[in-house]
Image 1 (cartoon, rainbow, N blue to C red):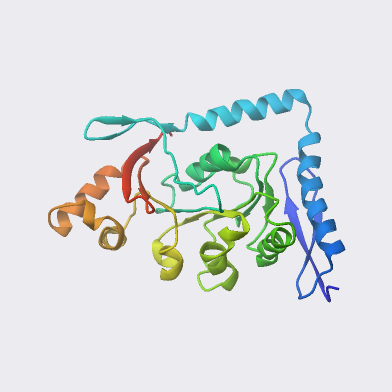
Image 2: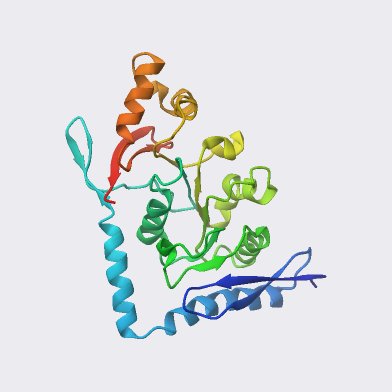
Length: 277
């Protein structure tokens, strides 16, 4: 039996607070796991049923709107209409979005969620939970980074043979670099069918071992040349020619006006895109 309980709150715009239980300690019975799994599914189903047909239609129109957020990008005059992430169908997948504030990270994060993970059981961790971009009826929103929620996901799938598709969205939670559960989420929890999209203002906010195990890396613009140089040296240098100054200039050109660079680390491919903002 579990020896302790913890209460956390999930907020959803237009709804009252809902309280979900998460367990913080060691041993669980199969009955507890089955009950917990059922509660997660019922929570998502409840959210879906609370909105009538007209509001579903409105949500669908908003989702279509997100599809238009990714606009024309170019590489050697080649037009790229969309970003297509590398996804391993046998496990969860990790995506990291880096860039300074106000460059488009949250817009892209929500676009990727709508494109790839909308039907997953998804929890969003953000200290700014009232941002309009988060206005999605299926999202479970936590007011802070709560490792027990992630542990619960892993536990459920370990007891149900990865029955459920889980997704974790982390948007600008900047003080969890050394958190053990965040580290495991990126390194090993993908094997428990948990996918992650994390948005941060620079790459050093993740441990190196975590950064080296991300499937998809996306780079927006930065305000500091030092951060641009760090990214070029670590991730993009082999694709570029010229001096460091030349490469920094190239990076700034490719990331101005809500443009971004996508690096598929599994297939060593670069592509270039632009948000229509």
